Length: 376
Image (cartoon, rainbow, N blue to C red; front, side, top):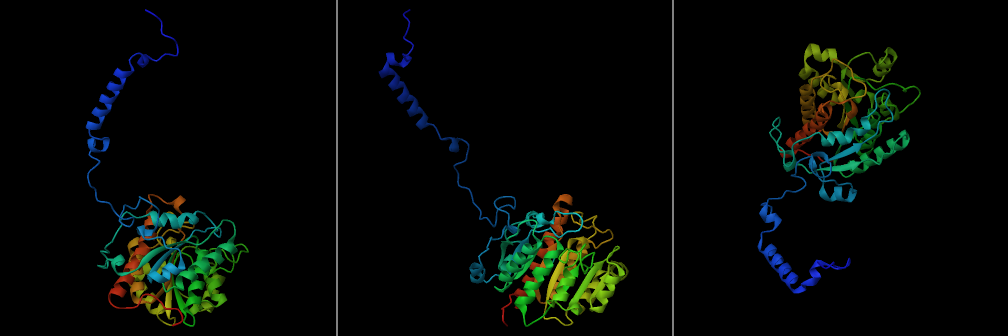
């Protein structure tokens, strides 16, 4: 057999026949169903909006709500409630990690679309305009800058008339956040209902005036909130020391130890807290440190203190308080995901926000005002 040159191609000998065979193959392929059809992928399927998709699909926002960071857009939408992230934990005194709290709280959900509160019998997102307004512009290792940017973010949101629900972050963020609300609400006054294992009324944390153990004292000393308009619930453990309690008493703070809840029951104590909250201020800022809940239920926090509230007690208390007072703003702080287990702490924080939103929806459905008009 004669050898073929190295550069020769076997099809070169019969180009016409090869062309015919190629055309036949192409015709056969075109007659076959496409891959999509063969696999049943060409049928019509229902598609869903970002809001309706499962919570693990797409960008992370609170309850898959619209991400609306532009103030003009917040005004135009007449937003009732805006979620705000404060991912900051540079002011902690013990375990860090709360900077990851806002994202974890947003992710700690499995429902999407138009939810239905079984506790209150309301579909909050059918009644309220609720959005996720994004995070304050935080960078690490700069407490003063972080507090300034949290103040500005909360102020601009509240100034649109929306109620900010701020996801922390360590508890130092309450100083700038509640101050922003107090500023917007002038000349009216705000009070604070504060759920926490700790009073957070220290003068300083090892010389730092803006640590997470000091925000309530800073709010009182700055004049943003009167001491008499503070109500604290759930205090327990071995801090603060006697001199700090003496300062609290001198400034008229009202507080309820966890032992009182044990002896009288959570409902009775919350009844008193609501009455005290309504005694003086025009509106209430609600601050929830997740460590008010027993660490057996909420382990993911920076300064856990055994012997705390049950999850259901806290959620019921939030529903009752928001139903009874004019809510000016809220924060949920000290969720530290690195110490959490199976998202249990983040889920409690997520539901704390949802319980407040649902209570506000009941109010609006009944014809009561939820939004605030600055200057009124």
